[in-house]
Length: 331
Image (cartoon, rainbow, N blue to C red):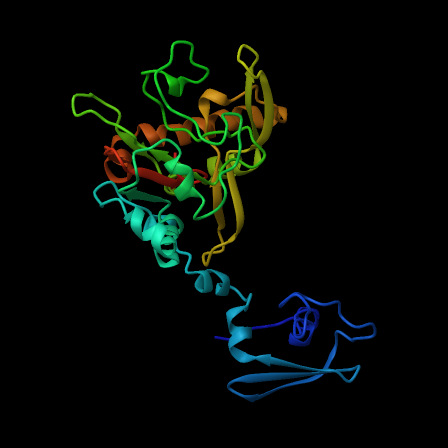
């Protein structure tokens, strides 16, 4: 393969701008008068590339570094190991990845194993977690401090007399993400099973991988996929009859894309789907009907028995287990 590097890109990434920084490998300003036009570039060996600039400065690039940061077509996808979602997602008949509480609390290797599962397929069950209030925050902190939300730092999902959320009832929940009306909804969510009597009927944990659903939508209806990446939906919570009244609104497309994959197609980075918390659609008149058609097409995928048979992950947590998942990917 061959790689092309823009002269300005090479100038801005000269190793000398990061060597000797006071606080570690932070980027230093490019010296005044440092030209961004090279006089010549020569590969002196397989290990190094030298670039001579018009100003007299010479940049010495490690060939492996250049290869690792190549931005030529397809290089980013290969470097990051990104493949089509259908190749990395967890299928309905596959075991859910697990890691033990002792492993993640005992070493960084355990945390690495955990987060690799979350990175690859978006879902991992932590086993052997103490059945105590607050234990879920302890393991969460091995990745990052839990954030405070409208529901606090830790919340309990229990059947309540005057519920402020449908989750606090015995009703079944449809596929959804939480806090879609936040500018930055939580990326990782943890659900700790404290107790689960064998006599209880129902209560299974059900997950849909939206990266898979988005890919299926793109294959079946490219136009619908494009609409859901472009037309902003309204997400809201408008609840004044609660201890701490709340009115929050945010608009964004259902499907967020970032960059392109090796096929040159937009890569899905997050999906925002929360029917109970959708507000009034505010879009251009010509987008209203296409939006609802695309919305129905995406929703229909979750109701398709063939899609469910292959992609709906369903299991029952046991007491002491924590379902952890990327909730910008899994509903």
